[in-house]
Image (cartoon, rainbow, N blue to C red; front, side, top):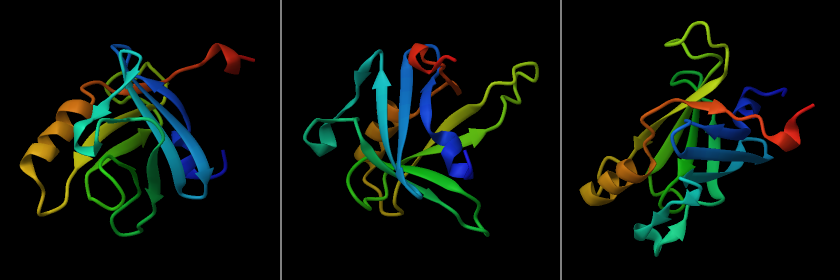
Amino acid sequence: MNDWEDRYVGHWSDGVGTEIKVVKLHKHKFLVSYFRDGQPVQRPWLGDRPSIDMPATYIVDPLEGDDFEVELSGSNSGYTLNLHYEQSDWLRPDDDREIIYTAISGPSDYDERLYRDCIENFLCQEHLHRVQLKSEEP
């Protein structure tokens, strides 16, 4: 992993049913799949399209900080799942595992129902930890 953005790549789980898989396409561009209880989430605001291979962008802004944005409702709609990477879980100092946590963003002129649906379907209540898959074991 050479770039900070590469730290997002992989399989993440909160241990209670939410999983996120991140694949890098090329610099700053990714595909993200989001699962609840092993199934992709249906997005009714997009004709029930499943939450598989959603486009994501890693944004570098020296003033605002870095951001990893997953498009939830189409290109440049403003409804995004934001992933935030931490080297370790500061709530559990003895646990040295990497984590990501989530937030939802909407445009300034957001549709309240769509925003609520995004929160209900995609906001994780727990931190997600990197999952070591059997195929990735040394």
